[in-house]
Length: 452
Ligand code: IMP
Image (cartoon, rainbow, N blue to C red):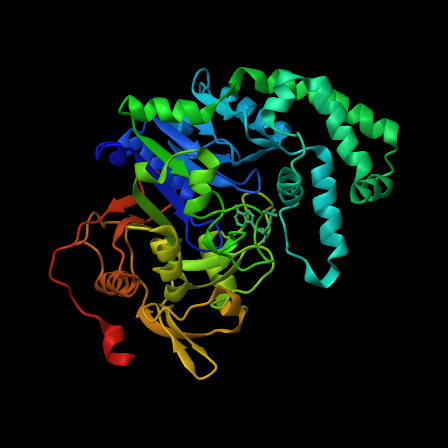
């Protein structure tokens, strides 16, 4: 491995609870840097990436967000769980929109399949959890990953190599699992109906997936050897990571940097830039702790201004303020060296806005710097806020110098407390609504130093 190899792979990750605008940043970076490959590493169609290009809105759930750049090859990596029905719909929509995927879309033979009964089980589990719901997207993600951990033969290669054997195994899994049996009963499905459903599912989607399936690990390795560049796309985000997030209110995959490596087969030695994506406020969809949540009127105002409704489930998102203690944690866990902040235009529509710069916890102060943050205690932290002046427009902003004073103060505060530079600012939903910033060396005010 020489030092040039290290330059080849960049990564995009969410820093909070997802919906930070990763799709838009991936599309922007792909069109700007011309990555040869964009590979998705984890999650399934629980994700919803919205991208607006040339007046058209595209929503992707499984297809990597770089697909709109015709010179980029996109890969669905081995860490992804694939609902083939959803993928088929997405591919059909791309074709209807005149976007070619021939020889541009590849699917890992080691990715896992979401079966119709995974979806039934996901929804039934949520009903059983009663007051302790996770608020899943109901797309079968958890049960599909659980069956992967159970080592059932339900991988893409199993399906495309022999759909009959795949169907037999899928039926066997269903029959042996009491929970699945219960789901079928609840949905008035008998064993014959389940078997017929799984047989036709397996036949249809084996044929459909086959042309796209390859060993993507080997493809990625060859691209690196050829000197080509790769952008890795994480789904969901740090606080939803099954290990490092607000467990059990998390998704079932690793949405952090480790998931990028295990979900693609790339080596850590290839990784160069790790972009952490955040919003100028915060949002969460589903249950679980959210320290900086605004439950009242202001939360509703942010939701409306930011159009915070889920791209996958259309659920209203819970809204609140950006939290620098949690952001610092995300930077540490993931080795983030560049931040991209979206929706700065949105908070400019407020008269003033808040930024969480520390927490109170028992008799302790927890700051981004003092390394006392413990994700297991997250739900018990009380936010300490700094206030910033809003009421600004970014319409004419093109670079650091043309940003309003309060925005500069805000950015300086985020950078100082997380010790990570902000390099991209999102000023609207379209691809062109991104400003790259390079700051002068001399800093301006740090208001939080005087008040805190
Ligand atoms: P699951 O991934 O459907 O099992 O849902 C687990 C939790 O993660 C729920 O709180 C979901 O709302 C949340 N979640 C899953 N995917 C996303 C996403 O792409 N954006 C935001 N939240 C998500």
